[in-house]
Image 1 (cartoon, rainbow, N blue to C red):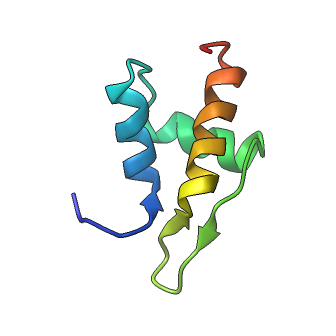
Image 2 (cartoon, rainbow, N blue to C red):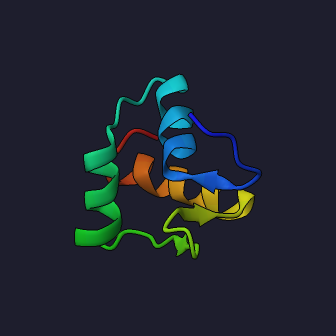
Length: 69
């Protein structure tokens, strides 16, 4: 996995998995695009990224959505 200074979808999924919440990329993207639970910025290179504060918020939203809190 490539290493970035900001949070990408892969980093957020990895964080959730280390906390014991199994979620895959397809489910994550469904929550972001179809369910519009949260939004991430898209870079000119096509990567979806967010800041550290936004990453914490996204993780808590996913946990609340699946009642994992």
